[in-house]
Image: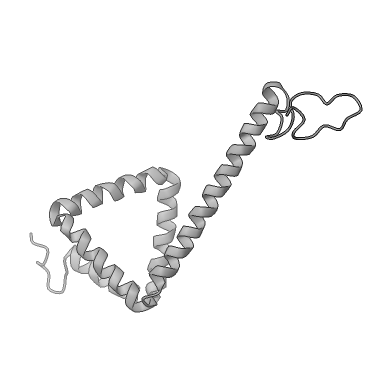
Length: 151
């Protein structure tokens, strides 16, 4: 027996499409956004971040195999042109400057942390080391110690 033997009956696909249209018309786009967010949160909780990384990688490989590397070049250019048109030509200069400042700050913080760690390690290894330029020999009695004491 076929799906449409009875007059007025519809296929499962037709019923699903009709039901989907009814829900869309009654509840609107926000409904689908809400259930999508809830579903995404549930999947994330059940499968973790690595699941999304894996399906993203697989999807990227599939698209690359089907469309070629040139596809990514084209959509990247389109996206860049769109951002430039939307935000103006100075946008890239501004974010480049901000990025450069952030990198500089991170490098400085890293250097400070490395110096502090080295100082702590030296302090733990055998006491404080004399500062650069300080005399290592004790001053003769009655005379103040100075930076050029041994000269």
